[in-house]
Length: 168
Ligand SMILES: [Zn+2]
Image (tube, rainbow, N blue to C red; front, side, top):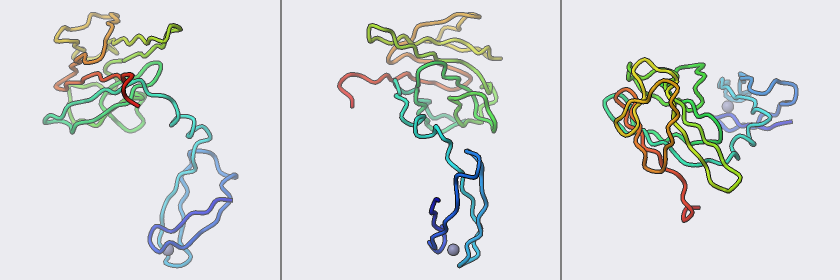
């Protein structure tokens, strides 16, 4: 059983969370105040996902189209693009920039056996291209990027910030 509280009057409500599919959204009516509210059944691997180590951050700078956004980088392909509902881009960010595709470019993080990590950037492909240090990436090019690398997609400037040893 799981116990939740009404967000309005804090009345405790118990229910059997095991009978519902993970990720499912349930609608509750509070027996005390009649407030209706929704909760989402956590995914079984949700804790695991949160514990995945991040290797650094892509900082999207603020401009006319978006606020400053930090995108955490995980091992494997980090697919960057303009966030839309149901997106396949696992590293999408909110912007109204029409020149940024919903899957625009991909940052791949690959830890090596020697303890180092290689990070590469490639175009998704996108309509307007992906720029590294001001240079347009060629089709199928995989460019190595490093701490401080500057990526431009659409009107957005994105800076790669890797975790360094003196950080936690
Ligand atoms: Zn209530």
